[in-house]
Structures are given as structure tokens and as C-alpha cells.
Amino acid sequence: MILLTGATGYIASHTWLALEAAGYAVAGIDDFSNSSPEVLRRLAALGADVSHFVRADVRDRAALDALFAGDRIDAVVHFAASKAVG
Image (cartoon, rainbow, N blue to C red; front, side, top):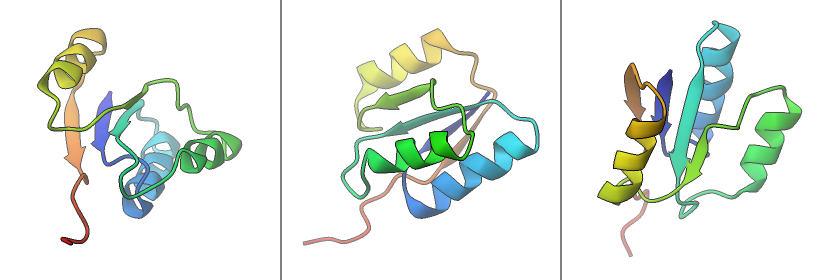
């Protein structure tokens, strides 16, 4: 399984679809600070399996520990970031 951080951002959401089209299982984590839960609905409407999505901040160690304990993560593609500093 490949974990996408910042999974509901623009680039990550397109990567999610491309990875699944290539036969990979995908898990996602995002806190929606730069995106919206609507992205998950759109991904699902396009046929993506969003069942391995976790709403959490990647800086939350307990959330990451739980995610890695639950699924075998083979690789991580890191897209999570603050896109603007106020």
C-alpha cells in the first residue's frame, strides 16, 4: 500500500487516481487545512477506494502510529505542506 500525505490536495488526489489505475492500493492522510472533504467524494465518484483515508495532521505522531499499525505501508509519497504562510 502506498500512503499519500496531503492526500486531498490537487496533485495528491490526481496521484491517487494514477496509482490505483496502475494497480496500487492507496491510503491517504490529510487534515483538510488546504483542501476539502468534497475531494474524497469526487475521488470515490471516479472509482477510487477511499476506505483507507484518515483525517489527521501528519504532525500527529499518534495518528501516524495508528495508521502504520493498521495497514502495511510499503511507500510514502509526501505532499502535505502549508501552501501559504500568513
